[in-house]
Length: 93
Image (cartoon, rainbow, N blue to C red):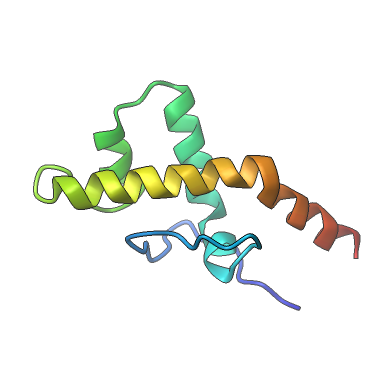
């Protein structure tokens, strides 16, 4: 089964899926997820990550920006704990 390729400029949803499996959205967002994790590790301000990576202005839409940031960062962390296993299994098939 073919999945979408990671995108450098994906369409960002207000909230990522909450599935126990990888979704097409996750495949598309892989680069963004890695960038979110990198920005958190580097201690970047979430406002900057929301604006640059998630394409929402925290000055104009603070609640939306914070929700989008929190939910996408949580999904990115899920990828490091569980989602990557799906990628590995698919690579072995």
